[in-house]
Image (cartoon, rainbow, N blue to C red; front, side, top):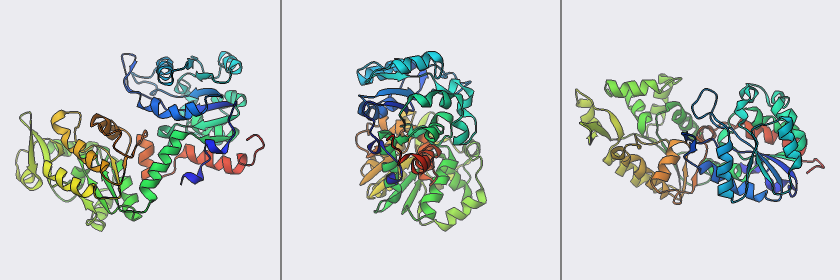
Length: 412
């Protein structure tokens, strides 16, 4: 899969001016950045370009949200992690920003303002239309190359992601390369594969399930969290009003009849919990599925049960490749983190292990497994779409224009 995309190995970037799209969107509370994981993931690409004039493009949150802010603090974080100055400019394509870009020396790094301050960034347009946007048309002429290192945003067809490859020779950075290799390995390599799908967003897990089951990629799919509860409901089990409401709130766009067919067609490959971790009187109580469904007053389900954890773990760790996306329960609460953490440990013991982005990657770090799994993805939505068999528009745009326009260019 990675062979389809041009990388830094395909261009002579030494001493050149390079525009790099990164994704350093981070949780911010009271003006302080709480997690620098995404920053650290970009360091290999930025360090490789150390003798270039590097300008970084990025976004933070979106209009209307509390953490929609400037990138001044982001530049400070990068400066600390790289141990060199990353200069922040509070504009993107103004005369002042262009003047500073033209003044750069080799080795300088500049971070421009939050691209989502400009409404055209998120407009629904084709790459060719985005190439005519102000962000692209005002900036591209000052650069030799464009590098997309923002894997976690690459499923979005935004101006700063798809516009530049139309008008500039463009490649993927080391982070994107690493992500594509790992996720491609999870889908395409030889060996038996297990997928563990959970969390609350049912549609995400369903899309991955359909891809890996219908294409014969996965030997087994283990379901946890709200996803598992949804499929138990489809089988006719009564979850109780509180748990049903949570499922209903998270099943938008799901066709129940289609999912019943999926369950029937692959019943020997879909594995469901045999017990739950429930909250009763403020305490964790593990209850078998059969006992739970006989209860009149059904308590909130907050985790998979201990018997399920043992059963799932024993099988998952025996696979050549194990992929997990979505937590098994409310891991933010100590009493109900057991299922998520233990299943993650089982995944880490498989031959090759992949942890999807979003909440499950945070759980892996909390469990101290960051160095024990083969790959932790930086991209929630992007990794889900990749595992679902979908193409990522920003990467496809690079591939298209590289093949059609740039691969034989004298400028490279």
